[in-house]
Image 1 (cartoon, rainbow, N blue to C red):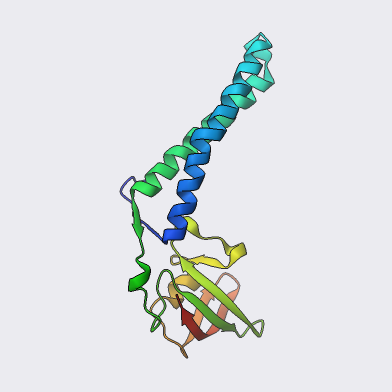
Image 2 (spheres, one colour; image 1 turned 90 degrees about the vertical axis):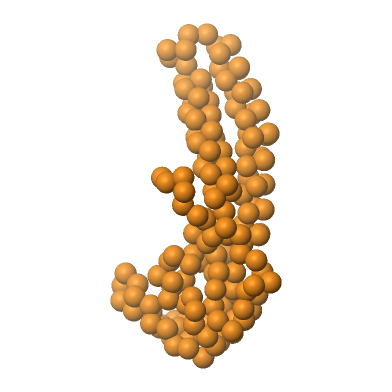
Length: 159
């Protein structure tokens, strides 16, 4: 992974990552240290699964801390005052009509680091996000997806 990659993020996304980083550095590190101490008290490390598990968890947490620090260091925060409701951009909430399912959906366009499809937060780098960027209310957008083409009409754009 390149250290120079810029991560486009909303202020909310940065706050979420900062909170996770703080939790990992303070609470989770302490918990793992305790697990390792307890596992060490069991003696022979060569057959100590608790010790191995704690060390693996420690490695995962330390890796995630490095990843979060890198993302925050290279974050390009979208200024909400610069988001236009004239066209879709990162930070926009976009209400669309999905012709395939004949329903209205609201997407929040975010950077790839904070995408969460279950919360309808889609990345500006995803096929749908990429297709919506720059479009205006009333535009019809065809999005190539793995099982064909999805068609959306942009109904509303808000911050």
